[in-house]
Amino acid sequence: MYNPKSRCADEFINHEEILETLDYAWKNRHNRELIDQILEKARLRKGLSHREAAVLLDCDLEDKNQEIYKLAEQIKKDFYGNRIVLFAPLYLSNYCVNGCVYCPYHAKNKHIPRKKLTQEEIRREVIALQDMGHKRLALETGEDPVNNPIEYVLESIKTIYSIKHKNGAIRRVNVNIAATTVENYRKLKEAGIGTYILFQETYHKESYLKLHPTGPKHDYNYHTEAMDRAMEGGIDDVGCGVLFGLELYRYEFAGLLMHAEHLEAVFGVGPHTISVPRIKRADDIDPDVFDNGIDDDTFAKIVACIRIAVPYTGMIISTRESKQCRERVLHLGISQISGGSRTSVGGYVEPEPEEESSEQFEVSDQRSLDEVVNWLMGMGYVPSFCTACYREGRTGDRFMSLCKSGQIQNCCLPNALMTLKEYLMDYASPDTKEKGLALIQEQIGEIPRERTREIVRERLMEIEKGNRDFRF
Ligand code: SF4
Ligand code: SF4
Image (cartoon, rainbow, N blue to C red):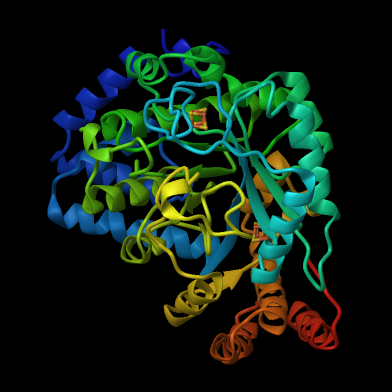
């Protein structure tokens, strides 16, 4: 039976409830009156239920679809302004005991080179990332209790935070590792991680079991209940996501929102972020084998409907997507993007020859971080390297209440401008620097409070003098 408050995955991601939702959404896909009611509710910016959002996703009335896109854009502007936060993935190890059929790191893939970074190699990778200008990382490892035990992950986090190269520093480490125990989540929390990220891959249990035929990840319930254990372990910022293309997107969309509703119902705080990866080509992986791929139009609709359904949840898009695709969905709801990414183990220091690639997926957007920053500014966005919230203890429900009341806005823009200035002073190309300095001048005027504006001006001067790491 469907029960968002249950701690059992089969009840909070209930198959029958999803099927009924999809049936309801399909039958109402041109029910103008109902769609108007849902849009009316969505305009209150308090979110929608999975059923309501599923109706919008299926809606096939052209004028209403335009309203959906417009509303998503407006909500994005209201909550996130024109800021886009930047991050990079860091692959520590591609040893993995699981059999995920869509991932080149699956245990049976014998021709991919297996690599695990030593602490010294991590140091070099982090210096390379700092020299690009990154402040926020997402750690990635395969699941392997022998090669990548929790102690290795913890030691690596410590190494990463300890490195201060020139003016560089990694200020927030988000972690994307396999589902684990409450005790291990507690250790990650103590190590100072930002968000714990775990993609569900698919919420469809039957497909999940087939797509994960071997290894500990085969246990659907253990995997699906991981966020509950993370929250119990004290990690209150968690990041959800599905891998679009594995199952029918309508099913995944409903499951994703039910997961968010479950976390809200049990812990009073929904996911901090939602990622929207689509399956991509990689060694031993042909995306055409998966016949649930989605086109760019559907992808844009999904992004817009997630934005409307969970306005307070950040949305992430990676370099799996091309420049064109990223450009299209940024204004519909994306708040964080990766830039200058390498998806291979050790790829920041030494780009690998193609035949020896340890990449998890092919990067579509191959541009450097400087090019991405420049491109964002060219489209009127403010690139932000802000990591302030978690460092100021603004996590979980504390963060969400500031977000819901709109007060977080008083921090986001000033922090974006100060961290952008750091980037411009330390890492930018001359053209990016020139554009960025002009953008900062223009954006200071957008800070609502006079006193905050004054402080930001003072701190921007301090940054010019060589001081770093100011935040609200
Ligand atoms: S998706 Fe993760 S768990 Fe699965 S094979 Fe790849 S690295 Fe291993
Ligand atoms: S102030 Fe907080 S919410 Fe705003 S950009 Fe920085 S970390 Fe994110």
